[in-house]
Every structure is written in C-alpha cells, then in structure tokens.
Amino acid sequence: MSNVETIATGQFLTLVKSGRWEYVDRVRANHAAIIVAVTPEQKLLLVEQYRVPVQRRTIELPAGIIGDEPGAAGESAVAAAGRELWEETGYAAGHLEALTTGASCSGITSERVTLFRATELRRTGTGGGVANEEITVHEIPLAEVPDWLVAQARGGRLIDPKIYAGLYFIR
Image (cartoon, rainbow, N blue to C red):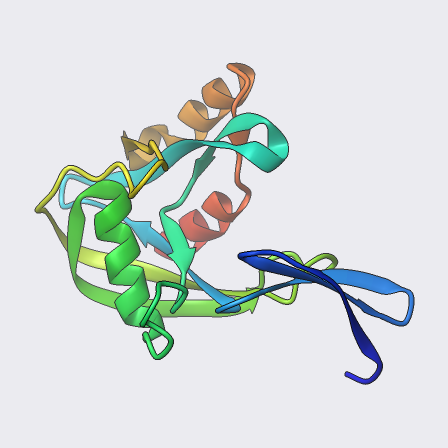
C-alpha cells in the first residue's frame, strides 16, 4: 500500500492512514487464532470476559494473538491456538486443524484470523486466562448452544458472531 502515514502508536496498536482510510495495525503481530473446541462429552467451550472497548461482557470462542508475547515472534499459528486454548479454558488439544483464514474486521484493522478446530480435548488446567483477563469458561452442550446464546444476549452480554462460524464448521 502506498502513502501510509502513522498517526499514533501505542504499546499494542498503531493507528495508520492511507489516503482517507484510517485503520489499526498491531505493533508486534497481526494474526490471531480462534479455536472451536468440543469436549468428548459434546460440549462447546466458550469464554466470557469484560471487554473495555464495548463496555460489556462478551461471549466468545477462545482466541488470542499469534506471536505477540515477548520472544515469541516466530510462534506458529497452531502453537498459538494450543497455547490460547489452554490458557483460557484449561483444556489441551490432542489435535488442532486450521479451518479457514480471513480478515477479523476488514473495515478497521489489518488483522487476520485463523479458525481452528480442536479435538481430542483433555482438561489439564483451570483456565481463566492470564494476568487480568478474568475469563469465565462455559461448557455448553452442543444441542443447547443456540438457546443458551439467546439467553446470554437477553441477559446483556454481547455474542461474538464468530461463534456461529465455528458452529458451521463443526456440524
């Protein structure tokens, strides 16, 4: 892209301008892993946390940035998916399969995401995230997911639409 101007740079994000278009780049990494994980008991793993930009609790698939940790610049997407799944949910995956890659929100960020399917799950930790993430893990029976999500939305939580993409790929 030609004529890209940096407007501001923070610890994690850079605001850039190209022509009349303003968007965000990540400082250390520009790709995220999102994991759709179903336990052997046929329960979908979802995470809930407060998200400052939207000032609400959100329901999401486990996810995280690839290679953004100090010293992890060469981290593979599959390694990041496994790490994030374990950090957020306490589950380790015996197998991770990349399903699709695309833009996370192409109108505002250059970030890309890869959706992974995690199988052969086994609980090896407590989950909950790192530092101040304060993640709540939900294990929802697959048959109950649509109604559960509606109830969560009615209760004031924001539902990440990528959950529905994940459900498409596992059905």
